[in-house]
Image (cartoon, rainbow, N blue to C red; front, side, top):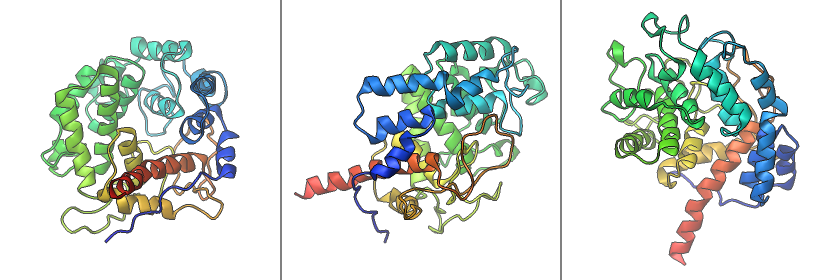
Length: 334
């Protein structure tokens, strides 16, 4: 029987201030999620992502041909797709002049030539390529920035497996879904619904994908309940938290998705939330446990084994989200 993490206490002022003394990308999210800052102050801070710090530097690195890293996609984390994955996590305002100019260049100029399967060479960037994990990341970024990714979403809906998830290895005969691929696709479907509005088919597919994660407690085998210690494809531990995660799944990423999607927390996530809570240090902060090798386009101030603002921000949001279950339960019993 799992034990619930304690109900949320007031946030540690020192930890919150540490998050506020950061790049605008973290500062505005901490203001929005962890303080009572007025909405206009949060919006003003968010606007700085396009002009100061990490967001501004990423935008400056775009080439005149619309690409980053001279590629639509690569193995090194500095390609067009990876930058467009990172910018929404920084919270770049998709309606800003800077965002619209940069994404417009991608839409109008970038294809998959030389970066995907040859049959996709002439595909425009937001048409995607063949792998659902890559297409999920493309669709999520495209929807965030208001681009037409309807065709890509249709493709992803047609690739959902009978167990509710997705797997890039399905064309090779795999019938079991992958946590990694499923997470990338779920984030895409959520972003698309936020852009285009609720859709019966998309919502139904998303709920099936969420059920795939929840039935497994976010990190357990459905058949035995045994914890999955390492991803069978990459060898990465789902219990060690990273940022950026790129295509990799971990428990914190799964919980952050459920929180963002407005899924009501219940006992199926209790063990996963307890795992997150257990990793808080004596100083109230969470460490970066995994740093995936590759070329980062900008330095985001994270070091493996050191306190991480990104992990701390995301963990505090998850604990706040879970605490709504405790509050609701107390209200029902009073």
